[in-house]
Image (spheres, rainbow, N blue to C red):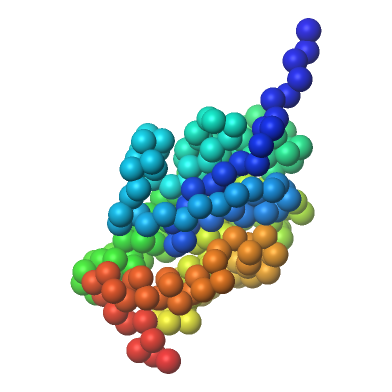
Length: 230
């Protein structure tokens, strides 16, 4: 006997921090799939008690669906895809597993990018930059003909990496570090993703100014350089 697919009866509710790249992954997926949703922004430096009560890891994103709380962006995105017709992961089990593995690499890159921005010395920031560079070189070598990671169709790998490229674009404007230099496939991929309406709309209108202000005020060497070259 077949069972009907479970679908949410109410709008999903995304709990967000305005600058969080992991939340942005889920916002992109929601917007790309045209899923109607509510969003609430919280301050990670002053977590409300209601959020601490529902978030097992104390992190965003959290997605509330019909009284159930989902957490971890990769899990949330697969749920959103499956309940809105699918199509953002390959049907082939091996290729699907490979996509999931590259999404995990993207998570490591987000962490490396944050460390680069918040490192207290120039050397520590450069060390984090070098770690990010190695990941980017591997992806450049693995990337196909594009325009998206899997070819002609956007996937959850693309929604996972778009936040990284968005932040690299801002960093490059503020203090050029050349992470996409000599990586033509990734440079083209970045431009494709940053041109998508779902990516542009996945952050608040004043995202860039908030991003610059946040990292300039957090004591990191790289953030302190923002605007110095302009």
